[in-house]
Image (cartoon, rainbow, N blue to C red):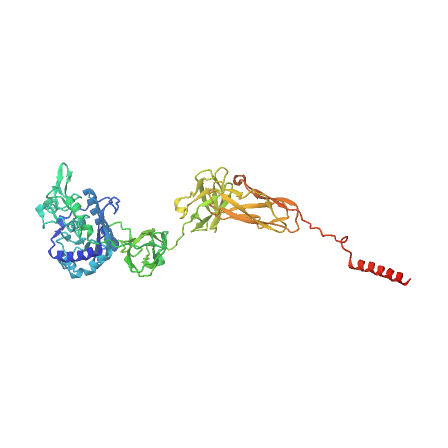
Amino acid sequence: MMRLPTFCSLTLSLILTLFLSVAAFASTTPEQQAKSIKLSSVKAYSALDHHIVKIGVFYTNDLLDEFSIEEINRYVEAQFNAANIVMENSGVAIRRELGYLGVHPIENDPNQRIEDFLSRIRGNEGDLNRVIAGQYGLDYVTVLRPMNDNRFCGWAYYGDPYAILQMGGRCISNTLAAHEWGHNDGADHDKANSSAQPVKVYGHGYFCGGEGTIMSSPSGDKWNTRHNFYSTPDISIRGDACGEKDTANVVRMLNELKDNPFHMGNRQSDPEQLAFVRFTEQQPLLVKESDGVITVTVELVNAEGVPTTLGQKATIELITGEITALSNTKTVTKDYQPLAQHIVFQPGENRVDVEVIIVSDDVSESDETFKLILRNGDIISPLTSELEVTITENSIVTPTKVQFSQTDLVILSVGQSRDITLLRTGDLTAEFTAYLSVSNNLVTLSPEQVVFISGQSEATFSLSAIENSAGETALIQLANDQSQLGENISIEAYILADEIISFTDSSELSIKAGDTVTLTLNRTGELLSEFDVEVELSHNWMTASTSTVHFNAQQATQSFTVTIIADTYDKTGVISLVLAPENIGSIIERTVKVPAKIVVPVPDNSDDKPTSSGGSGSWLILMCLIMLTKRR
């Protein structure tokens, strides 16, 4: 589907309003249907290289009186598959996609002719259809109702987005929609049975090889046969060309119209996808028949799976499936109530709970499995689209499953071992053995068979990296039967390439008593894990801030300190790194020298100056002698 700017959408509405009053129409009687044949599934295709026509299907409420919602869904899916097989067989890069399945907003009048009911939809009563078409980006609107009008199985307008299909009764062809949607594209019947002028003069069906192409409207004994492709002279049946270039070439018409504004997949713009939806429950559900109801939660996430919210309302469809046959619901017994619901996330809302009714009965039966399917959002898309639910009898023995407790990469150094934990869930009453295998001989497992005793939910084994395995990877897997395996059934182990540790400097250290010095280590290698280096001191007059230097993952340098004890003099020692041979760098020792004690001498001044007491005594004696001499 081509994205159109807003003004184009407004212009489209105006053109449709003018166009609807003059559109030509065509019908398909039960006798004119193609036969219903078993078709294979259409091949996978990409919207990047295919023109997409997005179609909304609206079923009337009274159709649910005759068919379950799952049967209606099955019918619709079969019509889309057949329509795309026709495109595939025709060799055109065009595909039709279901963009919406929901209840028709107009009540069906079973007594109203098919063309009159469709006219109501094309008029004012179809306003809600057009609102939904704009919300979901629907190019065509197709209504599905019971076979109330026995004259026709389908009715559509040429080059117009509206068609109606009748389901049940004699309307059994799985290519009915391919025919009616061909009218919506602008094609007519074959020229002999023309209803009106097609959009292109060569947009007619054609007879070849005894049968008509999809748009042919056969008569007589050819009513129940058609080729599953559109008319084109490029296809032949037993040498008979199935079209004429200028008079019967629907393939040519489709290839031309798909590039025109307001035709086919260009009628509506695709809404921008703003978020995704997933089930919060990631594993299949096992429920008891007596549970009565189960609650399933869906949540909004971004493309990476991170929960998110939106500032506007968003809607997505949730249905139950799978459907295996088209049959009346009165003949089918189910242990759940079929569901088709449009889930609405209000602005700012992240999660919505949905209830599924489980139907209990007295019938002894095997387990019943169905799926919950997310699809057809407006501005949101499924991230995980299906959740499997199994209904069992009222006594449930949950099967034993085993898995690894971790999912991240296990990183080992050469010669290193690590304990790995296994988890067991489910029935823990019996002894259970988990079997392990390894992709190569780079690691060893001990033991290779891990035994859980009764009641045990966790058990471990040892994973060891052998010598000469550096830089290599090994895959360890659980080898039990698939039914016994949980979600995480393998882990990967990586053996680190050699990491080299070295001092940053080789010079001799001169440290005074009582001083502290900082030393730095360099680490080279992959640095993927933590790493410890033991520090060894040659003498106890040195102390280190740590005996083990720890590197974190991605850390290339680390430091520690060494202190010299006070009153230590004239010493020589060594600081060493204790490493495995493969980790030894160029400098793994540092020499430490503590200088000798420096003694400062005290000066002796006794010969230079007399003391004050000695000097005073000498002068006193001299004075006495002088006085004695004078007396004489």
